[in-house]
Image (cartoon, rainbow, N blue to C red; front, side, top):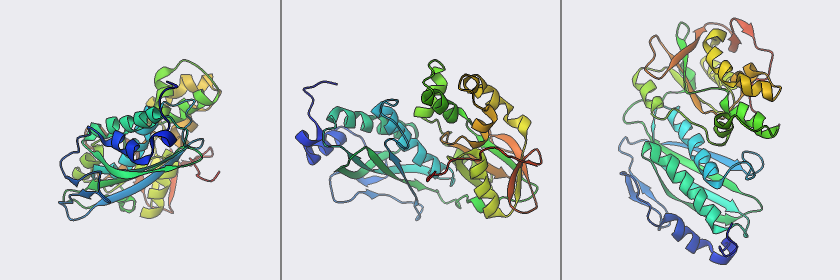
Length: 317
């Protein structure tokens, strides 16, 4: 860090905001961007998909592990994945950021650069937000999405006789966390997957177009999030262990180094932000079948048996 670089206290709120928005090009559909009391975003469908999520320093990220750019990318990715899971295209973000007054402005700039880098992968922009003093970094993101005339894909549409499929990887973030937490070096790709998730952008729309009956973002863990789908739909979801073997094999070396169970990472590890969906028969390109749906009291089982290990993230544990 350059000691000559000003802090948030020294620069001030509005000059900092001016720096963050300077030179940014808003995507099509943003009618009024930053600079007024509120932004204006087109809603050609007549409906807007909205989600919001927060990241709190020390709980959802650590600045001794993550660069500010990584934190920015993660904040955008986890919100975009929620829009994707509804079968919509993410169009815009509103970001509120709190940080200590002695935070160097360069770190805030780097955070914003990471956000714009991630949003640019799918053609979205950051249209407004807020900047406040806080004892620690807190990032609150609201994402907006467009359904393009389609019905939203809810958790409640899974039907007996259908298949469960996923797009994206499972267990990588949990494996990366185990490596960081235990101070194990190496495994650079796995470690990076905890810092910056890789949602399967555009696969939510692809799933909706292919007739997905139900869909969810895998943020809290595969079993936990499919459990919400099973409960909402009133069905049993039966996962195929063999279909998840590739994910288990991918994290097994890191799990062994951390003395952890790779199956638990795949079943219960969240924050990969893969998508899981229910299809009546064939699945689109980019998706793989991992289970089936049958009648019965709502539950998620593995090869017909109850999973006795951890099921996923709990916010207040």
